[in-house]
Length: 498
Ligand SMILES: Nc1ncnc2c1ncn2[C@@H]1O[C@H](COP(=O)(O)OP(=O)(O)O)[C@@H](O)[C@H]1O
Ligand SMILES: O=P(O)(O)OC[C@H](O)CO
Image (cartoon, rainbow, N blue to C red; front, side):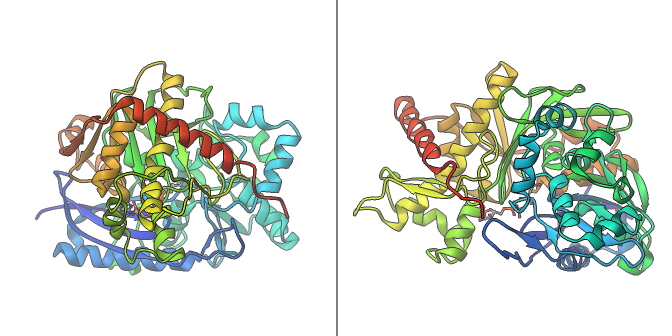
């Protein structure tokens, strides 16, 4: 009987499930978009029941698409949008609020207070993160501060906090497991990245009761079995990682200095820095890459909040395109950006600027500007933001990046990939399977149950789809990058606090 691994990839805009074979090839998959709840500008929520329903429906559909029996799935790996914060009732498993999504700026005032009180340096040293509403800690604090009854219940141990992985594991095991993994925990601002444990001092600064926290585990071990009611059979859940770490693992960035960039809703570049945390001097994050067995690998990360989401905005907000892929002919309808620069700081700017008050800005409009120029500027913004990250990462690492491995929904766009190579002066390499997030979760689960033996066998699965080489005029490219930096300057410090 052929055996397979099932990966759950619970992303920001959609839930996916993918069945992988031993070569890391996709044999069945399913995806469902779900509702984005936007109560006020800069605030983004998800209904946890939407997350759960779409994940389970896609799991069943992926198994059906693979035309296999459930008994052929030997393990499940889970990967997820990170930082998104859920609170649920320990007795009933019912969420007590909507999930606060990583993009939400709702806890900006709490962050200002933390910085004002001088906690920034300690938070950076212990958690590897900068003070920004992006991370879970201030989102939990926001929820508990907004309702005294919730805080009382949290302190009494009646509530569970979790990132999406914890919530899925809780539900998958019928409420028997309250766990997370080191990568997701490293994005909460509550875990000490040196000890890999919840840090009492960080909990105190953020006023988060320890009673709500899950147990922190490695990324590759059998955590427990799915309840038989979920998929009709008990299946070991054997891998967990936040989606960007999972993609780094799926890209087999196992060597120090290797890096990947994922172009999804946001863009996230991670570089393997080895088995000790490296502090960034250029406004990047230090994060846990993965822990397999007793060995922990760390990464430097640059997080961009809006990448592919700028295309979604052109589709759903402006209505100038019907489907995401329509951006390609529209951007191609003009020979260049016509002097238009688009900084998609819809929810502020992440790395390396960390400016929650920045807002989306389109500059350089003239009477000759067309929708094509704006579309082109939108596509280019993904590459410019990535260059900002690469500049910071190269300064931190002290070496030029040899190549960049890419993946994520927007990496299908060949013109974007070519422009990226031109802008970096570095080879951009796209693998055949660029569902690397799900693949990474499958690898972590498969390693735990002996489906794959070691990292080398995973490396052999990586196959090139296409390589993009820099070919544009360097002087022209540098001029454009200079304009981009000026445009970023104009977008900053715009939003006024309510
Ligand atoms: N041809 C394309 N060119 C540019 N962006 C695209 C294209 N097709 C899809 N996208 C963008 O890719 C993103 C989806 O990527 P995906 O990796 O599925 O995201 P996530 O996991 O964050 O939900 C969307 O934001 C979409 O707008
Ligand atoms: O859902 P994605 O792929 O946009 O990833 C979201 C990140 O994990 C946020 O940190």
